[in-house]
Amino acid sequence: MKMRQNTTKFLIILLMMLFLSGCQTAQKDEYSKFNESFYDTFDTLTQVVGYTKSEQEFKTYVEKIRVRFQELHRYYDIYNTYEGLNNVKTINDNAGVKPVHVDQEIIDLILFAKEWYKRTDGKTNIAMGAVLEIWHEYREAGMDEPQNAKLPPMEVLQDAANHTDIDKIIVDTENNTVFLADQRMRLNVGAIAKGYATEIVAKEIVAEGFTSGIISAGGNIRVLGKPLDGVRERWGIGIQNPDKLIVSDEENMLDTIFINNASVVSSGDYQRYYIVDGKAVHHLIDPQTLMPGEYYRAVTVVAEDSGLADFFSTEVFLLPYEQSRKLVDSFDGIEAIWVMPDGTVEATDGMEKIMKSQGATGARAE
Image (cartoon, rainbow, N blue to C red; front, side, top):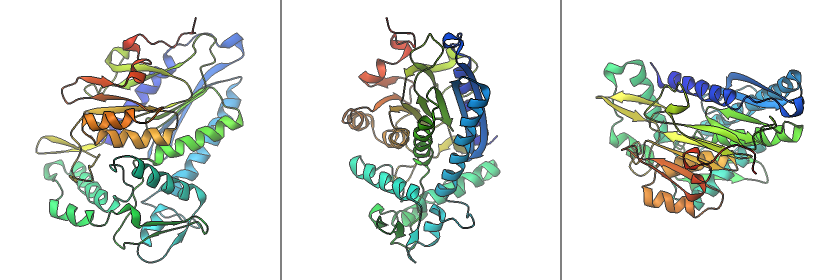
């Protein structure tokens, strides 16, 4: 079974737990809880849960969320061309040829990625596309024909790595163009695109009036306000135990954290992989070694901004613990959990304060 199917199953179970937890009477009977999902954006399941005064109101918000996700999916797509639209694939197709005029959402995403690459340890690099294309091809081939699964040759990866200089992404903000100054360079925004898009959608739908809900785009979870059930003050979000891929109840979760107006994003070796010689080979590639990172089974990041949480979930996964912990501690508003290869768990002080295992709850503060 391909891992994309397993991941979808996990997301369904996770959000079912969210839907079923704390099903108290809605606040003064004004609000009811609804949920809906769709699977036509970012090649993943997107689920929405929230409190509104009517089902029709909820469905109206969900449709606006879906339409906006579809638009952002087309902008950030690296595989498909859309008539009348310049997207990230268009930029890649014109590498070393000419600047490409793009919409502001693409400019903003690229500038965001370049800024945080410079501000961190440089593990999350959207210019890694040439390397990641090779890994993608070998992973797809290995999933289609497991008996013939192989690792990419290191010399091929090293050759591609010569074309990953993020400074060669030239952004002209006056003319809204992007130019790749290396003909063999390719952008791959997979490490941040879903989270970044989720943040855009969340802010826009809150401005429309949807102020109590959860948006989960492929596990990039963005919480809006607090649950309007008249009981809880914070939403409870289950964190997957990487050793238990099929989650049947809360006891099989690693932990539960309680948040409002924030995002939760996890990265792990269990999410997208193929098997080579009996070993799982996952998709989170270290730009220095050009191989999958092996410091952790999983990391989970909490941040107010979903794009930032998505970025940091990859960044901290690819750093050894002391360096990873130092990076997280150096930024206010970023919290993290690390699951080590032996199953032990480390967490920032701020994360411990919102973890169920450390006594946190979603109940109304006394």
